[in-house]
Length: 261
Image (cartoon, rainbow, N blue to C red; front, side):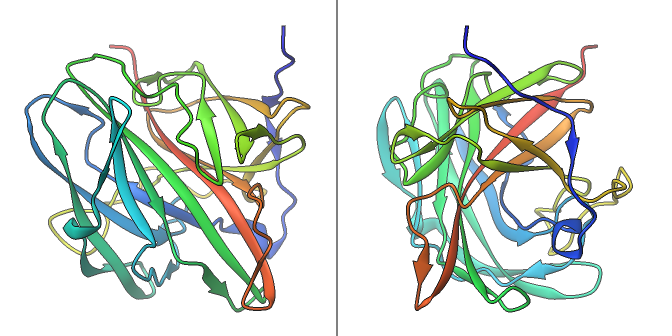
């Protein structure tokens, strides 16, 4: 049996770690009942403390995978803004055409973002998942990205109080010792406006939650609460430089946890 690391490690309380950058592919739900265009908002934000918003330039790629087929969604993107508590920044609204039953894997490859405080670039290659009619089709397959987190649990209906296991990949190969930041989406964006709804949890003492992948790239996290959870494997991608500066090419995945009722 492959050894799994249980993620209960808190990060060091350094300022750079207190607020984690996360690219959001936010939809109001993950389980889609009726066919139609599902609104999605792309935001570069600190979601756990509903903090500072970073400017998101137009992505290099935005697409979906359904039944193994890739559909370009760049034409659905429209520039908008997202308002944090202290600032506003550029974001994008798009849509996902959900018609047939099955999984819809959303993929965003953003342009590298320059983080002035660290003098580095950040590129978070991000995945999120929708499903229609409870028919699983694509969720357990890698998408062939430069770097990605492959879920080993269905990512759109994880049980709160259970666990989520992922595997960090770089060019299809497992990444050992990857540092994975984990954050709860404390305030969900309001798709009808430019801000977010009220926060539901307080910032966690000690900064970001961190797990380390094992020798085979696996990590496991005990999911304590229903809602959206993000996992970012920092610097797991093959690209390490952009425009003469260090690049952190990260793999991000979003999952949705539910309470048993």
